[in-house]
Image 1 (spheres, rainbow, N blue to C red):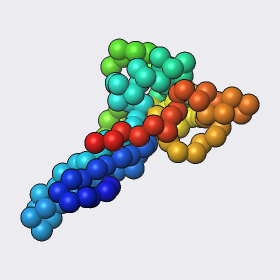
Image 2: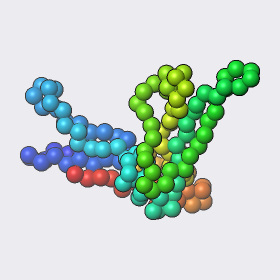
Image 3: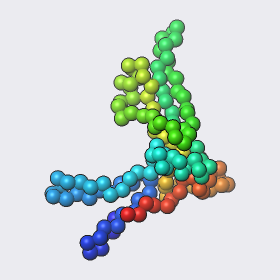
Image 4: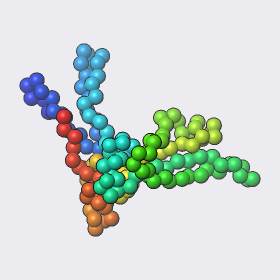
Length: 140
């Protein structure tokens, strides 16, 4: 955040957040947004750049010996409905539901679609793709 006279400039990458409060903290303004692969515009940008996005889920399975947990990874496509819940995963599973983890980007297995650093996601010699997880900030 850079404030010059009466202008406020904000730049962010990844899951860094900027907020501004006024009226003694009674009013809060969100100045930035997270760059998450679950966001439709970031999802489409990652896929168009040659990356993939996946989401893991866990659900309880009944078996003759009792209960077990089954984990599944699903590749997300453009236009897919975003799955997930803010509810506690254990309570979802105990009710027989399926709990979803964060969306992650391949290469890198990061839960953000923009980041500074993370060479394993960006450098070709390390299996990365420099066009997928980018460090280009949003500037407002």
